[in-house]
Structure formats: C-alpha cells, structure tokens
Image (cartoon, rainbow, N blue to C red; front, side, top):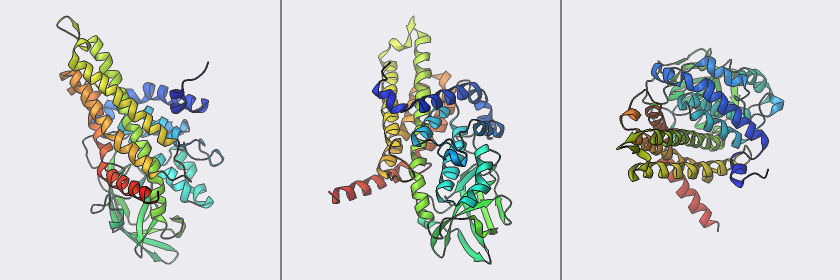
Length: 386
C-alpha cells in the first residue's frame, strides 16, 4: 500500500516506524503506570530508566559498531515524542543522559574514552548528565566562571554548576570549564576527589527527573578525561545544542499530542445540558485550535530533524523548532485543562502534571528569548550573504 507523504515525514523508514511502535508500546505499558507516583515523590525511577538501556534507546544516535542503535536525529525525536506523552519528567532524564551526555560525548571523545564510558552509559549502569549552567551564567555561556588548571598529569576544577538534570543519580557528567579563558570539556566522575552534588532542588514540573548543583572544590580530574582539544569545548557545546533543542521541542509535541487526545475523548464523553460538551462552540475552539497547533509543531520539528547531524549545522532550524513548539505544549495542556474544568485541575488526571511539565520547555536548553535573538542574528547574516 502506498504510504502518505505525511507518514514519510514522521516515519521515513520502516526502521523508524518499528522504533515508534516499540517506544509507544513501552511508554503506555511501563512508563504511564508509574508517572504520577514519581512526579509526587520527585524521584527518577532508576530501574525503569535502565530498561531504556535494555531496549537500546540510551545510544539511539551512536553507531552500531560502538554499541548504539546507529540511528539519526529523526529517531531521537521519535523517542522523545512518544515517551513525553506519558511522562515528560522521565523523558527529560532520558534526554539529559542520551543527548546531553552520550551524543555529545561520543562526537568529541577518543577510542580510549569511549571504551571506558560507553558500555556503562549505554546499558544504563551509569546515569549521566551535563554541566553547563551556573548560578551566574545560563544563556550567557561565555560568562561561566568554573575553571580548570593543570596539576601534573591531571586537572583541578573549581566552580559550581546548577539546575543540572540527573545531578542526584548521575555517576558521570560532561562538564564545561575555562582553561586560561578557553571553554574546555571534561568528563567528571562522582568518585573524583573534590566533587559532590547538592541536595535535590525541588521544582514545579518535570518532577520525575531530579535536579541539583554540581560542586567542584579543588576537584581532581584525570588528564585522560579531557574531551577533544583544550579550548574546543564551545564548538562541542554549540554542535550538540541543535539536537538537544530539537528533542526538547519533540517533548513539547508529545505533551500536546497527549493533551489533544485527552480533551477530545473527554469532550465527547462529558455531557452538559443533555448533550456532549463538544457540541458547544467554546469547546470546539479548544479542540480544533489545539489539534492544529500540535500538528503544525509536529511537522516543523520532524522536518528540522531531517537536517540535523554531527556533520550538519542547522541552528536556524533547531532554534525555530523549539521557539515555535515549546509554547505549544503549555498552551494545548491549558486548553485541555479548560475543557475538563475542575477535573483537569485535579491530580486524579494527568493534564495538570503535563501542564506543569510543559513550562520548562520554554526555559531549558535555551529560553525562547535566546531563540529569538539567535534567529534574528542568523537571518540577518543570511540576508547579508544574499
């Protein structure tokens, strides 16, 4: 049977289609039942997280020869989209591990480093994360103050990273620090002397993933843990931001998708004045606008994902995808809550959790204001080049 063009966008190959079905089934069967509890507890479900390793999802973009799934950015978008329908907080922990650490680490590491870390992070034995944001430097990455100085064959790091996803459970982190003013990437293990994480930082949403500070006080890091060349960290960071932002946008699409499904079903089943509430124009507006917004965001995100890869730069696309899609999850969750009324506001139903979770996507991985700034700069540069 001939496939629709839209299906070719979302599932470009049979392998992508099979991946989507596997993740969708897993998410409905195993992720959904635990989501409310771990949101309430504010804890990552580590055993369930390791199941992602069993499924081969923790190295979705890593070549098969190195133990990964050997897939592309579209595959990464599929996984984040499907998982986020049921538990965005759990999905955020997955993103911090698989995109911010594993994908970034792979493309700036050497064979010896890969042999030490990949088996354990791809299996889920070690939870991982990335340390960039600081108490005084977020979007302004050049303003970071964490430093690294040589100490014999190794390095000594001093500084603090904050709002770090997987900070409580993580064993290894890709950490950015300045060496004589030049941003450099290091892998820091929890057992490095002088490294510790703070207590869990409680937060509004995405509560099924933890967040903490990473604190380096004369932290001793082996010389073999420098990633790439000294001073090349900014290049690694910028390259990885594109797939990070696109998968964050995919999470917003997942939230919106789920909320459309919930409110359409609810509006058909809920009766008022002897008829389904979907017969009322006010409700129809929420259903129709919510669906249209979700589909538009979905198409943009998947289209951009086709043009993202380790050797392909697409900052304009990734910034546009996240700028447009991030508010959609929050807006459609708000529509669903309004359709459901008091029921939507109660923890008995998932909409209030999805609504809380969605807000972070306008902040994390670059604020919407940062995307507006980047796009203006890049579009102006494109205009100047003709």
